[in-house]
Image 1 (cartoon, rainbow, N blue to C red):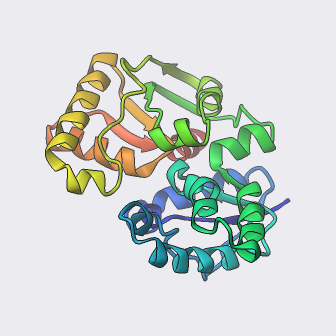
Image 2 (image 1 turned 135 degrees about the vertical axis):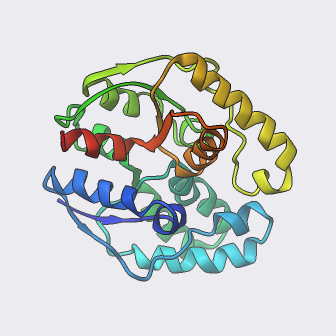
Image 3 (image 1 turned 90 degrees about the horizontal axis):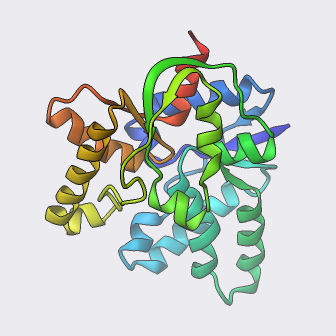
Length: 242
């Protein structure tokens, strides 16, 4: 099976190790990943800020970049939701691009969705001796409907103790441009999230969206807490190396 890797801006610029982990996990399952070099930002910052014309120009480039791909895999529920939910809004009424958008959305998957729902894999043979809690990010959960897929993967990790996160469904306060425009509110939200993580007793908090994990991890680090915030692919890849 062949697939294309959509790395996303945050992974490419801030967490390249996550990109490496995605490649390691999928290559380990016999998936041949290619990397279309024409890919850029998905256009979400412009879209969320109301610059739809500019977002539409960026989106056209991304649609063409992945036109020949059998599957498109990404470590971001947020960016995948841009492809599947927001691109149709951008091109509504444009018959030519609507077809291309529909084709892109149907073959694009967040990585845990792809592992569990397409490859039908839950146990990757990982071992991770730690207490881990899971943060269900807003876009992945509410827009893509990702609920059980990450948890199924985590429950199959040897020696991993999955602990409940109090008020897990509450937003962490990142929200992309929200964290900039409403910084004071965002700070209170991430503080509440961090306190719930500490209350869980977890050594590690994981999730499927790097924006959330960057926000949560930054707060944890700023306050001097030892809890790690890691993407689920990073946790699984590290576990497969033990």
